[in-house]
Amino acid sequence: MIRGDSIAEWGHLARRFFGSWSAASLAEADCVWVAEVLSVQEFELWQRQPLADRRHAVQVARQVESELAKRSAGFADDDDVSWVLVAALLHDIGKVESGLGIWGRVAATVVVKVCGPATVRRWSERDRFRGRLGRYLSHPELGAELLRRAQSDRRTIAWVKEHHQNQATWVTPPELARILHQSDND
Ligand SMILES: [Fe+2]
Ligand SMILES: [Fe+2]
Image (cartoon, rainbow, N blue to C red):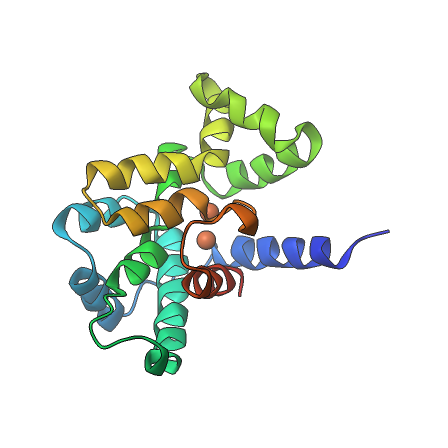
């Protein structure tokens, strides 16, 4: 029997897959906004992402921005939540280390289902296609390392590293983590 969460997961993958074929570029207003939110080093990383990933990241970050606006009454005036937007914009930055295109990512999804994530992750140090698959699956850790080198906020780095982990292990404040997580899966 197919479980409900499996259907949701495959639905999410299908949306990402078909969305990645779109050639629509980013709106100018979004480009300006991204440049305002990110530091110079973070923006350089951002530009390394393929268009489909940049579009996905903006979608996630805009959703996070609107959720934060709804809850602004719950945050103190001096609460700095800009790191949350940076986390939304760069949560998948580690994928640039895999160099996988659309079909490679489809293959990665299938191989992970067959071999299991732990096995595929162990391939990260290998060369050729297996290495790419391993690095694709390790994108949270690789992304965290890229952001460490870009001197990002430690809270941004923490979320990027844990964004595919079990909720029980999150160190990001629960309400913000939930907003980031739900916006990524919408
Ligand atoms: Fe991710
Ligand atoms: Fe994502």
